[in-house]
Length: 280
Image 1: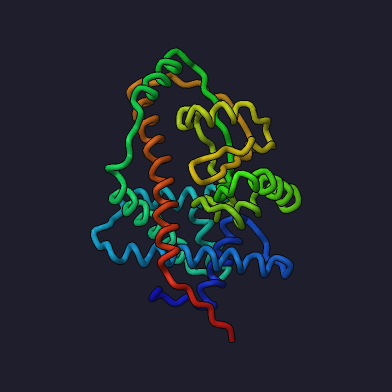
Image 2 (image 1 turned 135 degrees about the horizontal axis):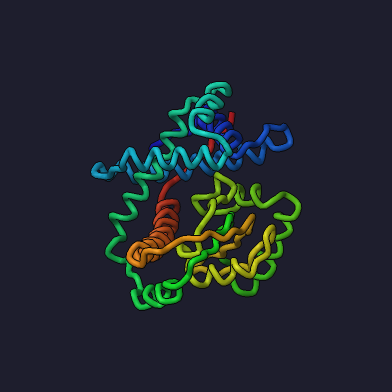
């Protein structure tokens, strides 16, 4: 498009990836890190080009602070420590902050474009409420995800085998960063702790039957394949407010559908934008 990506942008992206994932640089990882950084910066620039066409988009400072704190927490530190680590590694923290602003503005754009297409099956929600109304204890799962584009049926089994082999040899986190098309890719697929109430019934069933430390069976989602890694499980005791739970379930369904539209909208833009590489 009309945006230039420089060596400096790629270097800063590599620093961001290393810091946010508690990774150390090594020459063996150089090419891999560069490929991840290029992919990430291209994706962000494509989103920014589209955002710039819509000057009415906005986000709240509260949301920005929440997501920045979550980034720090995922890297096992507080926000002040994250800022200090960025300074000590010659990375301007405003670069990470700007990345998050672009994601929030992109989410605002997707909501504006697709909110009228989002529909929730309230009958299904009520069914889930009835199942949960007398429960005093709930499951929570610490999970990571890899989302990849589906292939033709005859190649599906082979593709899944290849992904599992890569996970075995390179680790789930590294494969998520390299292959996943989800927004969680840059944090190694990390989704943090999720309460079962925020998960679709199909996901709850799969996660409850997946042992800690194991991969879930592949889940077909529209045009994508999803694989979870269950890193831990716990039970929490909680008195539930049915109205609050209903709102959580509705929000969860809406978020799931908006994420699907987000990936689809990005794919359309990516096909329309010209990308040129220049070598010295």
